[in-house]
Image (cartoon, rainbow, N blue to C red):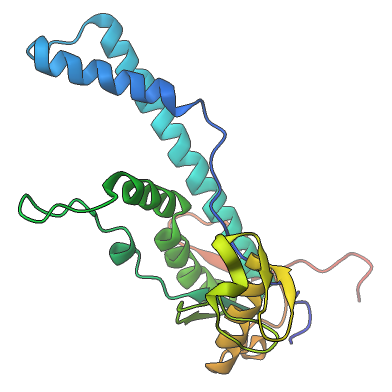
Length: 231
């Protein structure tokens, strides 16, 4: 491990924004649907105000999600020489379950809710930011196969769905008895897979911390200023 780099395992979970309840947005959407069906698409002044409020709330949520993602990815890229992530296929994970008229889907509403949770967690954007920030700060980003990371024991390597009954918070290995928080256990397994595929924090190209310096028209990097007492 290179000097100045901290080693920490992080398992990122869904972070929901503390915005006003979705009920207000849903009520406004019902008003819009009512106007489109019965008023020929003519919106009253009150409904136009409601639409503006919905747009404001949606923008606020998007800004909060973007801000959190940037802060998280910057912290990971700056303070960790090796970053292991799951190679998720977000597009396939969030496919609709509606099906067709001949073959209708099952549990469509539940699948739609899961899709919203996955997209709200923003895994695709987080990976995109990590890819360019890892190059910017000299870290190593490794994407590992995501299969059974939450069901694999980080201590003995046993894969068993029964080790995490009901997808709960506790992971208890059925073979060696290892117990841990399910997310932490999965993060240890992801790190181990990243290292087995050749990833190492010693491959980092950073020798000293770097800080961003704003420049007109282009980006520049410079070494972090040394303390006044340093020779």
